[in-house]
Image (cartoon, rainbow, N blue to C red; front, side, top):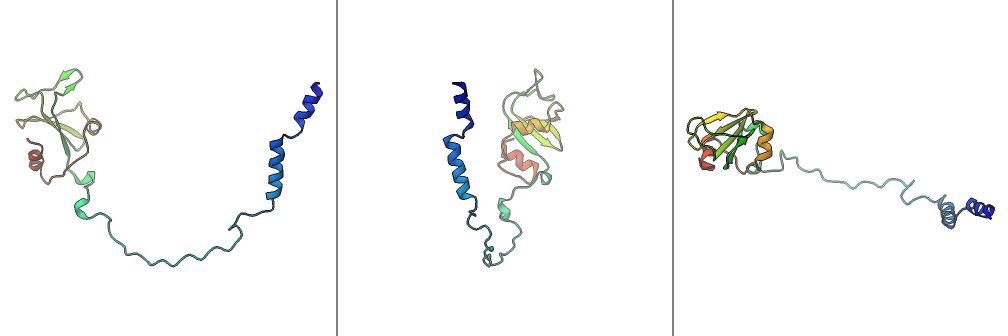
Length: 147
């Protein structure tokens, strides 16, 4: 009985026989386009070279063309369990967070500024949204943000 099972296992299965038959029929056939001379490419008119695809009013300045970025921070700012307050007026909310030259500065509503060394540019980038405007001067940006 075991010899019959082994003998059957040595013979190819029905699927294997069909595969062998198909591969034997396809062995001397070549796919279309193989071996034929390449088709001549169509003559294409040269296009005019332009300096850029965006008009100047839609171009965004790169990071090296901008002196810095800023964002409003309405809620209190807590770092290492300590709530940050302005040294001069004691304000603890409604900050402007400025990122310039790899430094973070905090500006209160009264206009007092201080550098915050516990924050870095990576923190600013994680918490700021996309820039919605660019301004020529710092004062224009302050006006746009309501300060």
